[in-house]
Amino acid sequence: MNMITNHPPTAELQALDAAHHMHPFTANAELARKGAKVITAARGVYLTDSDGNQILDAMAGLWCVNIGYGRDEIAEVAARQMRELPYYNTFFQTTHVPAIALATKLAELVPGDLNHVFFASGGSDANDTNIRMVRHYWAAKGKPDKKVIISRKNAYHGSTVAAASLGGMSAMHAQGGLPIPDIHHIDEPNWYAQGGDQSPEEFGLERARQLEKAIEQLGEDRVAAFIAEPVQGAGGVIIPPETYWPEIQRICDEHEILLIADEVICGFGRTGNWFGSDTFNIRPDIMTIAKGLSSGYAPIGGSMVSDEVAEVIANAGDFAHGYTYSGHPVAAAVALENLRILEEERIIDTVRDDTAPYLAEKWRKLENHPLIGQASIVGMVGSVVMTPDKAARAPFASPAGTVGTICRDRCFANNLVMRHVGDRMIISPPLVMTREDIDTLIERAWRSIEETWKEVKRQGLLVAG
Ligand code: PXG
Image 1: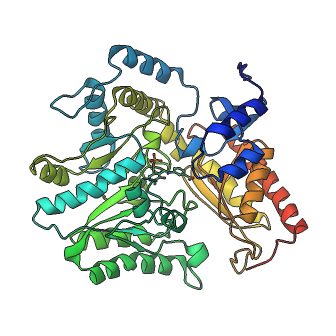
Image 2: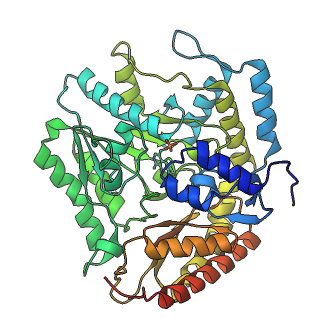
């Protein structure tokens, strides 16, 4: 469908953007020279840019538009809620219907006894809540020294000072004096890049057991919690070996620490079940949610909290924490409508039983390309690793991301949004992709990889480092 929008010419928009808009995670001077791509509209799984191109969005925005773009029901619910009650807070002995209804629905959908929610506006601030909550929890139980949170290198938990400290991105830690104290990072379960001669199963166990070693080294009386994404998303879609999560769960069960599953990406159908915790059989005490909770139609996130943790917090007096927009009525109403659509249209069932297996079969065939060392996928989140030497699983000699950037640009040129993380290409498309959309995605991805391969050879970059 072609949409006609009234807007100034692309160059004019780009110039204004460059003059006044600071983009996240962007070298802004460089972008200003190039000009940002201006997205003007979207429907289903396609974006429209200011030049009228129709671009297949294999990233669902930023891993969030699970139900696809352009659902009028959501717009109507938001408009109705804005007319009825655009805002009220939940701080001082008040509540409102959208927050109550969403909290109740979430308690029903989330596995285990995570029956309580503390609302935030996104994933970063929800993880800030988690840090404060787990430390407050242990203090309330008479163990104020249990403060250390164990996380993983190359994890992404958000961009606030606390969430970026929890995360394990060295480039983020290098800016602004991070991490904050009492965060400890262990290695990630990235078999392809770091597994050496070990089998994925052996490697998964070894990486999980780093958690046990860290608890022993730091002292169990100092460790509050372990946090991890079921599948590392922004780190490059690292799907852990099968042995990893069962061993992590065993360690958390046997030690007195809380387990926080950061489901900001994995939640709400992404891995083919409602939550990554369902797919990987994880039993967290706290779960971070955002993104797919509203399919990105409104900013909302939160922390799902177990009965036991919530009870301790409830009985410990004031929890001196909260955001103006915690449980925002419009965002909550939008999230509820999104959950209704996901549920009533059986979108996650279709992913699990039909489209994800169909996509997986085609995605894995990308490994037939000489440039692709590994293609992995679970549900609707996957990655391919580009390599100059498949047998050795070798990285390129060029700085990480050189080849990834070439491929990302080829994808753009072929009207496909596929992200790169270093020299991995990743997808996280809307869950409503049809088989036909998947065929288009694979066809464009193959073409972009083929063009990348030619360009890499032309530039003499097909060299192992
Ligand atoms: N946890 C996880 C697992 C995430 O992926 C956050 C927390 C933070 O959520 P907010 O809503 O505060 O952004 C995220 C967000 C990328 C990219 O480049 C990924 C995210 C955000 C921005 C960029 O892949 N994930």
